[in-house]
Picture 1 (cartoon, rainbow, N blue to C red):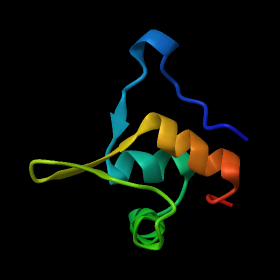
Picture 2 (cartoon, one colour):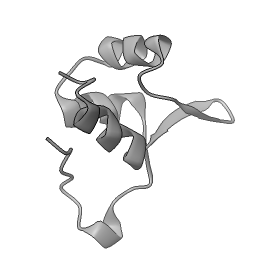
Picture 3 (cartoon, one colour):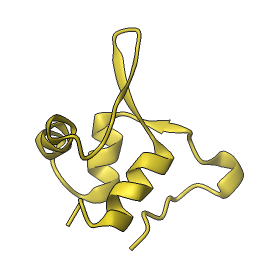
Picture 4 (tube, rainbow, N blue to C red):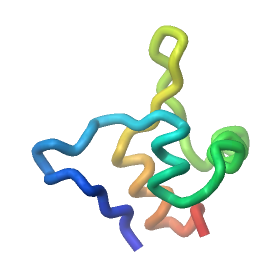
Amino acid sequence: MVCRHVYSRSMEPATYTRREVAELLKVSVRTVERWEAAGLITPLRIGGTVRFRAEDVDSLVTAGGAA
């Protein structure tokens, strides 16, 4: 199952916060942090923020890591 976004392709955000990933995948923020610690999803650290590429979120779902 590929993560489907509510945005059209042209409006789709390039990155997501932990909270946005959690909401998209219907899991807790702590679960996203666990996936990060386990190396299932790689964060981008931009200044003091943590973001995740939309492609990486889709890959996580496709690979079954978010099961």
